Image (tube, rainbow, N blue to C red; front, side, top):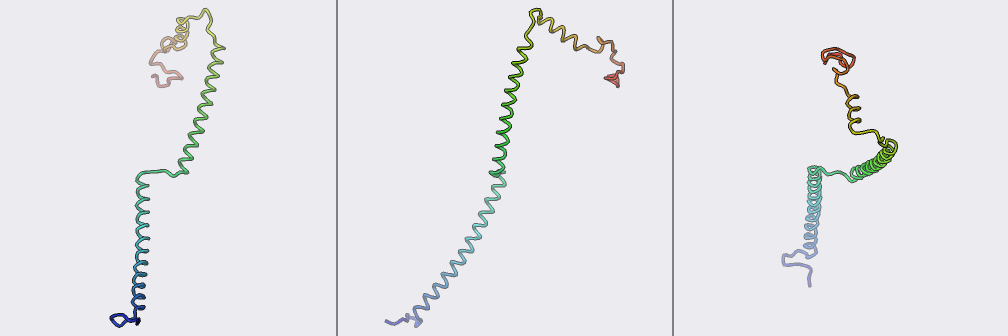
Length: 131
């Protein structure tokens, strides 16, 4: 059998031409693929920016900060409880103290300016403008 086709061309050159066209198509498709990937990556980045997402490192740092704050708060709660218990044992109510006497003592400690002998318009060190 001969290597010539119906047109008189060699069959090998036809396949070479087809291979060349296919190679060109593949290289064009590879270029299109790169462009599509770049466009998809840009769209994904824009979507992430719109969603206002945080990076994993920033999230881990915030979680560590929250853990430390929680530990400090728990330690302070324990300290306050211990101080309150200590205060409760030291300041046991005396048998002669009544709620009325405690109210009277508080009222005497907080006196209005008239009871302290100062008139409302009088200037003092605490109220230099007289108010």
